[in-house]
Length: 162
Length: 278
Image (cartoon, rainbow over all chains, first blue to last red; front, side, top):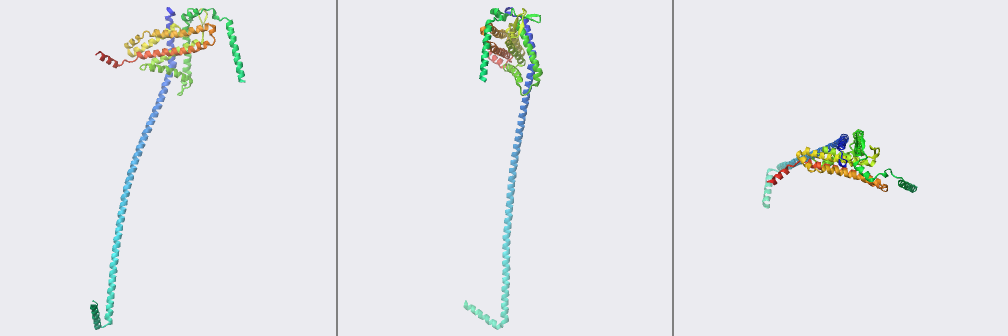
């Protein structure tokens, strides 16, 4: 053959290459590739775990945020209710106070009226007493004729004064 | 003190260099009688430097080099499998990083260029790339073998042997063809057969690149005047460079064509064609 081409040697080269392929494939390529795939899988697992943890953290954060929002809303509701209750209580208290004040004033008026009535009655009694006493004195000190004269004098004086 | 020591070292180095140069001029090299044209012819055709394969067959030194490379790989791979791979860590060390980079590079090359079907392709590219790179570097070491005539010959890169290059080119083509058949059946065969020049171009590209490297090195070493300093560039750097380039080129081409023929046929194309026909 030209150029020293020899089919037998080509086949021997082929045999050698096939042997080399088997050696390199089973002893180097496959185990190294397997390890690399295993490591890639390991990092993918780590990545997935990290993503899952992140998602869980995000979920927890959202849940806590939701809880916080609910708590805020509840606090606001309770605050509002408390304010309303407080206002109601305050209104009631004010109302009671006003009623008490009104009652006090009415009582005071009644008391004053009672005192006044009482005082008037007492004064009337006193005046009556005094008149009676004076009349009794008059009656007891003069005679009837004298009293009658005096009465007439008094009456005349009264007319002249008029 | 340091500068004095440095001056002494430089002077000694210069003296040794001059002595070596004079010695090499005065003493004739062993291959001085050999004709350069004969050496070149042997490098290509291996008429006089055949090696006996276990007494069964006389073969080119390239085949012996190929078996040697496989043996080296076997020992290396066994050591890695037994001592290194079981101790792999999540955060890799230097050796683990080297292995993972090599496997990852060819795996990614297969995945990038052939996204639809790449499991076998990745393994093939890893083997072919490693084989081309390491076997090309083998010629740097100059391991000696005894020919059938009793002479000593340095083991060349296996792919600078035409038989090795044809094997790799044709095998790569068959791998591409298999990808086409598995993915698209007869359509895949058609797609692959369209690139009928591939086995020849891939075989002769790699053969030409590696052989020319070997021939240039042979030429440089033949002339004593060129063998000072120049081999650092020609032998070491060029060998490293074309080992890398050839490994990359063949694996890249194989993955590209494999991806092309194994690409599934889109139904849209069919409908577009039918619309155009109407």
